[in-house]
Image 1 (cartoon, one colour):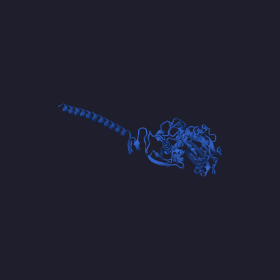
Image 2 (image 1 turned 120 degrees about the vertical axis):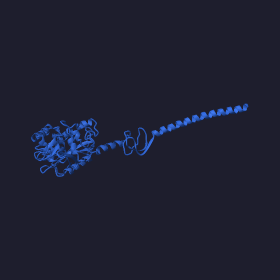
Image 3 (image 1 turned 90 degrees about the horizontal axis):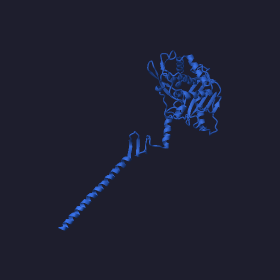
Image 4 (image 1 turned 30 degrees about the horizontal axis):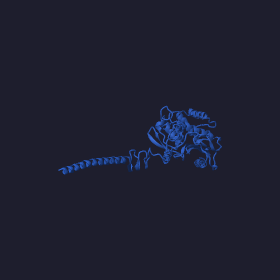
Length: 378
C-alpha cells in the first residue's frame, strides 16, 4: 500500500514539473516570435515598388539610411546627391510668372540679384530654376590659368568681363561710340518696367491697328522676337516724347556719358553707346530689372491679343536663347551698325558678359570668345 502511494506521489510531482516546464518554454517561444516580428518590421524589403512618398525603392530600407533607385530621399546624403541637385538646377528652363509681374500700380517684386543670393535663393542669386550663379561680388572670382590669345574676327568693339565685378578680361575699342541698333530695346524695357504698369492694356493704334495687348505681352514681343512695332506702340502709349526723355534721363542717372537714344527701337544711327556703357546698362538691369533678362532667355512666348482673345507665339531671333548657360542678352542689326550682340553666360557659377559691336558673325564670334575664356580662366 505504501509502495503504491509513493508511485502516485512521484507521478504527481512529474506532472507538475512537466506543466511548469512547458509554460516556460512557450513563453520563450512567444518572446522569440515577438522579437522576430519587430525585426521584420524594422527591415522592410520592397522590390520595384513605391514607399509612402511615391519613391521607387529597391533593397533593404532601414530607418535613417534609405537606399533609393530612380528617386531621392531626404535621409540619403551623398556627394552624388549634391551633384545631381546642381545639374537639376542648371537644366531647368526658367519661366516668368505673369501673375506675379502684372500687379496694378506696383513694380515687379523681384529683388536684385545680389539680394537674392544673400537671402539664399535656390539658384544662388540669379534666375530661379535656371543656371546657377553666385550673386556675391567677391565669391569665387575668375582666375587666369592659360596664356592663349583670343582669335577674334572683324569687329568694331568687343568687351569680355565679369558682370559682377566689372573686371575686363579682353577688350577692343571699348570706348568707341557705335550705333546700338536693337540693343536699344533693353533700355526701352527698363523704362517700361520703371512705369509700374505691366498689366496696362495698350491699344495698338495705327501701328498694330485693331489690336490690344498688355504692356507685358508687348515687352515679350519686343525682347524675344525683337519686334519694332511693339517698341513703338509702348513708347506711344506712354507719350512718345516723354518716353524718350525718360530713357535718356535714366541713361544720365546711370552715368552713361557716351549713350544717347533717339528712338525706342534702335533704327536711328543716332542711337549710340560704347561697350563700356553697355556693360553698365546690363549690370544695372541685372540688379534692378532682372525680369528683362529673364524674358530674353526664352526661345518663345505666348502672348494674347485681347480684342479677339487670340493667342500668338513669338519666337526668339537669338541663337543662344534656351541654352542652359545663357542668362540673357539682346541682338541688334542695321546696315549702319552691322551685327551687334550682348550676351551673359553662366560659367563656374558667375555671370560672364560678352559684348560684340559692328561684326558680321555675332554668334560665331561670341561662341569663340566664350570658348577661349573657358580654356584660359576658371
